[in-house]
Amino acid sequence: MRSILISCSFNCDSGPIMRDPAFWWREPGLEAALLAPLAAGYGAIAQARMSKDGARADVPVICVGNFTLGGAGKTPTAIALADMLRTAGRHPFFLSRGYGGSVAGPKRVDAAHDSAAQVGDEPLLLARAAPTVVARNRVAGARFTRAQGADVVIMDDGLQNGALKKDFTLAVIDGRRGIGNARVFPAGPLRAPLDAQLARTDALLVVGSGDGATNVIAQAKTRGLPVFHGRLETDHAAIADLKGRKVFAFAGIGDPEKFFISATEAGLTVAQRKAFPDHHRFTAEEAAELIMDAEQKGSALLTTEKDKARMAGEPLLAALQAKAHVLPVKLVVDDTEALRTAVIGALKT
Image 1: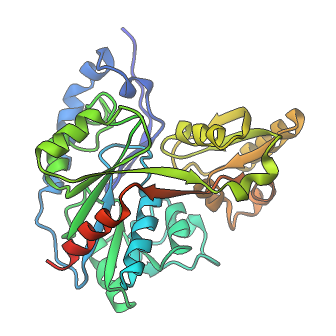
Image 2: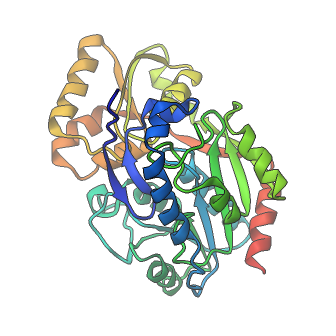
């Protein structure tokens, strides 16, 4: 019988951070069956945590979450919502747990001086778009944003965290991968039973094409939840100097394959690719190896904005940070006005 090894660290808000096993993304088989007892226990704990009433903050809270481990597009979605709210005359703040950072908070992020080692990689990206607070205690963090001048909070991740009362929860799902084998961790990628998560969701946003989310869309519509669609668009001007060159793409995010596909769809020649675990902290040896491999093949290094954010303030990664190009993306929602109306309407209730 094959042994099953799943290596991960546990994040009490977001779930385990790990490299996805391949069996998560195909029909349930032996691996999922063997891990079913562990999945039942994990799912029960996650569902109990979600069922809490949650404390009310002094400011409306919008939660951007997803059903599964791995990348679905939460950060670009949060940034797009901030833009929508500013257009409506609001003053949004982002609230993040700051996974990967050492700061417990509440702390307002300084994008120019803080490092990912302090506040996490995602907060550094969010802070470029709107004021951002990191806090392990989400309730304290939300109240801190109010004291800092926020009139609405966008909670990056936290669908499975019941500590803070949310006024509107938008669940983001990848159109290509969906929820994989639909099993709860560690038997599959779900962070909690799907029914329990849908019960805490106010709307669904499907990012990208593909039929991986078909069943979830049907279940959301059965519950009367609005379903929105969007896509990640590349900033072509930012990669204009890479056209016609070979590219070595590397990424340590939830779904590196999505990044590789985006690079190819943007017209770049991806000659090499390397995937690292989500939130991966590059070592000096890995940085040197990436640079050497790219130079030997005559390729330009390309990575994500999130990966490059983790290099900032790290002297041993300065050379890699200087040589690595980024592929900036933004979320474009097909019916922006309808989503804006839904969000603003929830804040008025």
